[in-house]
Amino acid sequence: MDLGNFSISLNVKDIKASKLFYESLGYTVFHGNLEQHWLIMKNKTSTVGLFQGMFEKNILTFNPGWDGNAKALESYTDIRELQQQLKDKGIKIETEVDENTTGPASFVVMDPDGNPILIDQHV
Image (cartoon, rainbow, N blue to C red; front, side, top):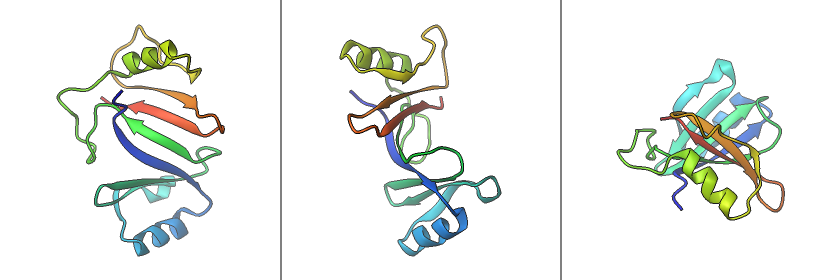
């Protein structure tokens, strides 16, 4: 199962302090808006999203259809197919994608320890 490009989305208390900290680790801003309290930062192939006040927990994030630079892939498994594959394995979907739609969509599953996993397709 190919869930797509991986990153971690962190719930941060102070976006400016977090930005400075991750910059000291060699990360640079790749995308986002500091004034809107979200940044995507990269260090080579490692991606960390910083989000202030947008969700309660840190989230494991996968992006079907994207490469590591947020560029659309020619071939990938659509999010609706991924959702069905997980359902077929007995995985509970917390928030579902409408299977009658196409294009961008997302769904969430929880791992056994309650960690949210966001599958977020942008293409």
